[in-house]
Length: 153
Image: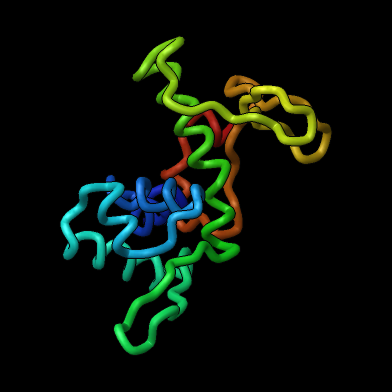
């Protein structure tokens, strides 16, 4: 499918996968720690970790060769998922757990204040609002019918 969202979901779309990535951003790198924290079946965790390693999101680094133990460390490709997880957490805080029930908050270390992420235009710096953005055909679009009719104008 010629859709970046659909193709990305093939890599990170499994429910456990996003939780594994969340913990990787928290600094959890070992299979046993992930399994204990998440309560995930070992075979499912192994499969999800293999997928993330195969797609270059995590890197497997041996720390105990004799026992075949590895750390699973975010690659640059994996670290690029940071804004995805932050905005997904913010959506969950607002629409799922509700105001005043947020399990974690982000504090900006430079100023010491709690913060939220905001999408901005990389050219002018303005906040991106849904109604002020339109999609247009990109170089990889192979089926113009994939674009919504309003975007084809």
